Length: 248
Image (cartoon, rainbow, N blue to C red; front, top):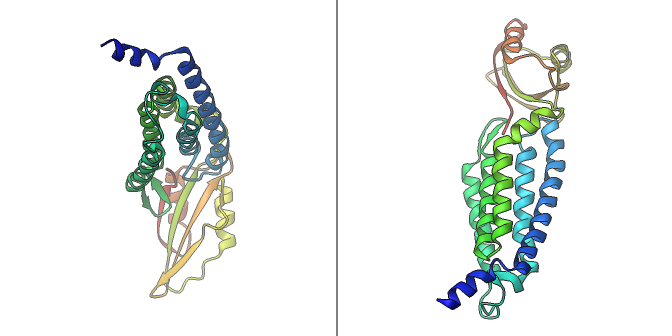
């Protein structure tokens, strides 16, 4: 019993706590850098935004930084790391979480859902690894950071300047020759610009079909989907249309 309490106490020794704090500071730095990169994607209305980038960067750091402190694993010196290779176990966790994350990501045209869920699952797996190797303080702090940002991240994003995106599908009347320039002017008048590289052109039985994404010119700009639908319904040559927010 004394050996058990001595082992348990070693996990909360000053040196172990110091290591946990250093690891958490690394994780926090990676998290902020991930937010910085993800903000650019959020601002441009892309599916993967601040939450996704922040969580992925944080989890990647967590799974990497612990390899720099093998002497502090499992409370420090209580196992012979020459006999086992925990790194291979961690590698297996990462691979497994990749498959699980892919399973929760759904795509419907330009609308992608599940990216933040997949990133948060990966972050949780990193927290589990941290607990597994005995970095309890870093695991607790990482869990608090993840939970806080999952709950309040959207409100934080809403404070910053942003541009929302709308996926547009247009079906034209038979033998219609639509004009991209006219569409650009129409959407500019409604506070949107057509995103470069988003065009997908097709057709069937002489009915052209265009798919593209429009991005608002700024926060608070850009007409509502209801008003856009009213304009499209009155536009000559358009037989039917579909509008949906392009989001994650």
